[in-house]
Every structure is written in C-alpha cells, then in structure tokens.
Length: 343
Image (cartoon, rainbow, N blue to C red):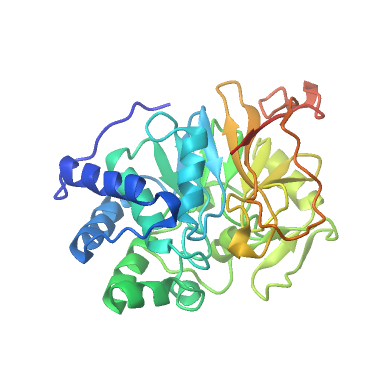
C-alpha cells in the first residue's frame, strides 16, 4: 500500500483541511453544509488533474476497503468512515454512484473529492453510471445543484465526472468496477486504453462496465431490464476470470438486502453501501475489507429502525466466517468469511 501524501496545488492544504473539517463536523445529524461556490469549483478543477494523473485501470495493493453506491446519503457515508476509519488510516475504493436520489449529493461528492485531493493514494473514486450528465440531469443531482447554487456548477461537476477512472485491480486478483462485464471485454488492457475525459456512450465497453448486471437466470449474455447494456451469466464470468487469471469481481450498481450478495459461487460480489436506500428499502449497507493476504471481511451498517413492520430477517450481532481470494482460492473453504455489524 502506498504511503499517504498530501497534494499540492492552487487550493492549499489548509483550505482543503478546512473544507474537510466543515463537512465532517457539520454533517452530523443530517445537517446541510454550505460550502462556497468558489470552494466547490476549485475542488472539481483540481480533482480533475489528480484523477487524470492516475491510470484508468488503477492498480492497488491490499489492505483496502471497498464501498458501493452512496447516492447522496451523506450521513451514511460518515457512518461508513466511522466504521472503517477515515483516510488515510484506511485506504478506500469507492465503486461509483455518489450522487442522485439522496438529499445530500453535494456534501457527499465534495467530501470524497476533498479527500482525493488530500490523500490521492489513499482514496480511489471509480465512475458509476450516475456520474453521467444524461443520468444525473434526471435523478436529482441537477436539481440539487440548481436549487443550492446554479446550473453552471452542475456542469463543472459533470466535467469532473468525465475524468473518473473506470476500474481498479487489487493485487492482480480482484477486479473492481461499478457495473460488470461486457461482451467486448477480453483483456484488461482494453480498460486501460479508454481515453479520458470522456462521456458515457449508450452502448459498448464503457457503457457495460458501468451498467451491466450478473443474472442467475442468464446463460451467456442477455438483455437487461434496464433497457441499457446487458446481463451476463455465471459461465461468462468464470470464462473471463480464468482468461485473465483473476479470482473475484467486486461491483455495485444493485441494491441488495444485506449490503452484499454473492454470485457464481462467490466469484463475484455486489456491494451496496446506502442503508435504507431512498428511505424506501429496508436494506443494510456493507463495507468490504480485503487484508494483505486477500482475506475478505464485511462490516455492516444496519438499516435504521423506522417503526414500520417489515419481513426482513434480523441481522445477527456477530458472525464469524471467512473467504479468501488469493491464488490459493480453490484450497480455501468457501463457507468461511467474516462480517461484523456496525452501528
């Protein structure tokens, strides 16, 4: 793992520290934190430079923690950091979908960009399908920017989103992206070769990386109910992993009840980190930790009690299990993995 280093740029370290302090201290309890337009603009402009200085296929060493969709749930983002440790104590990969649907997309993305400026080698932000002007124009982020600032600032964010990397590779064994596989994806070099800044096309490799879904009902490639991209079966996943000498795909993009869900005998895991998603789902949120030996464990953010009746199974207080995605994967009992409940 790389050592933490502070960035240098027009927005000096003291200014970044002040933004971080105000966001973390002021955001408790769901309170709105109003940064200035100039501060936000500078965050976006400087973050673009940092993002483009790093490769499109990030190569990262464990230990690392992985977070799925946040969707503007800023209080829950702070809860995740409370659970896993704030940068640079822990190194993070976020799998995208920082904005839309939740009430505090601005605070969410500003905190993550500020940490990216402060500790560029301890926090990595992948692109999700909602980091796209066509999508977040419709699902809430545009309206939040317009209501609290102006449309010009929304466009500045979209320019920054066009610079986000698409995937990360952990110790050459765990591939992370927001969505999933593509019929066009044969080699990881294809991800590395995608040029940035770029908008997300309506079809093809880049679209699929951010939009596709695994499906237990699919053999090969299938049509997606989303009307965008495709679904892929366990056969295509196993074929891709074997061809590229990988052990695990870690992705987000779908709300799952327990915050994580396995596919294809634990060769793929979906991580979703926004508990009580949109206030309509009774889901937990999850944080995946991968240690130096590639042993994986989950920390769980339980959904808040709403007082409404529900039928979900209760989450246990503590369960000791484990799984390992090292090169000796096949010798590791797959009925073992860790997860620990958070508050």
